Length: 607
Image 1: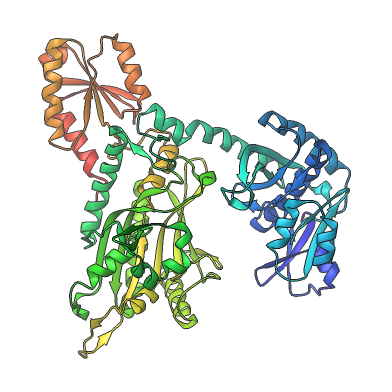
Image 2 (image 1 turned 30 degrees about the vertical axis):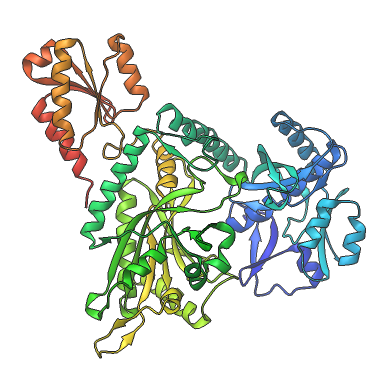
């Protein structure tokens, strides 16, 4: 049995029942949207829940004024200000008021008004005046429920009584319009579902996410830190964290060599003239940092592509040379607003596992297929479920429409030919080309966007890249931008939370913690440590003056995969007593057996 009808959809556009009625739309060829936990339904429900939250705030607090309340990946939020101070403890009170208002069963009505009517209706409300300034045209829509009204495009559910299963999740500050120079507003986030069980499932996931928070675990495991003396969004990698990065780099490098990639490196600052040619200066400047050297402007690179273009241009290229695959673990800098910085997930400096492939148009499909297979193997290694999404031409782009269409079709054809399912994100492409986004699902069900594959026929044109074809004529190559992990910082944060800090052996910062029982055993332990390091197996020796049980607990808290205990018996028998965190077992092996075991496990993941 179907649930309540709340909207219709056609040509990727949603029309709520209010709009259908106002515009007298014939819905014969429209898809029906019912109140359930589908993506479209939840977008409508959560938008309406945001308005219900605003209505509750308006009734509870003095002089409430509201900016915007959009639906976002984590639910919804509203930015607002009131005369009173609101704390996290107030969220329960707001929730209770929301439930009471929902039970009033207020119809959610839609009206269309002119700009002058909007200005008069929201007179003396500086937040709404800011919203009005950002809307073009003379037609405004408002939604009204009870005594609450707000400018809004919609869509919304028809009645507040359909909002039953929701939770306000957190309180934050937010600058007006995201401008750090503007007024600080209050922001409340919330979540809503069509059913009670889905809400409960989500809240359980949130609780688990708090336990797995990479910022908390990063501090406990001594992996990384941030220091305001250095600046926000600029992580400091401590020895253990740096070892994780090194281990991932070693893993990737072996995999890339097997795929015939060549290492290159470009400078971290380039003259702004190059960024103007590429289009970054006009389309991405607000995300970049600039400096001047000898009165010449330079841009600190937010991407590695221009350095790789210059590598390509360093020689005359033949069709026999293609495809050329260049890779770099390139450090990039992007200006992120302070309000969105979040541990390693959102930083201002990060390292991309970047690569660029220069190929002939006829080679595009095969290269895309190879990259997708490569990415799939990488994600399988880390035990991630993943899906693909094609992002198409955005509103702000370079190049002509014909190139965009050919590039987008090439991505679709590559995935379809190999029976790879994908979704479409209309308008989500980079400004220079369409892309495939690789989205992974972690151990507790959260989705993360990591890798990306982008076809670019625009930059080769702008930089006049050429190769000599089989007819001895100059032709334009296609440039494929690709990153599998996305960035080391973001990917490591996801890994920490995915594995709850218990990283796989091959990337763990310490593979073995050795606990010697005395001085004689310490000599034995150091010899073992020296041997293991020759095999790139990192060990730590605990020489603290603590009890055996305390030393074991300390290593367990540090989530070391193996703990080796060495006493007089182990020295006599040339063995090691092992506590195996991976298998949750204890056993004894000879030194040679244990070395072979570690060596095999460390290398079996490589391509």
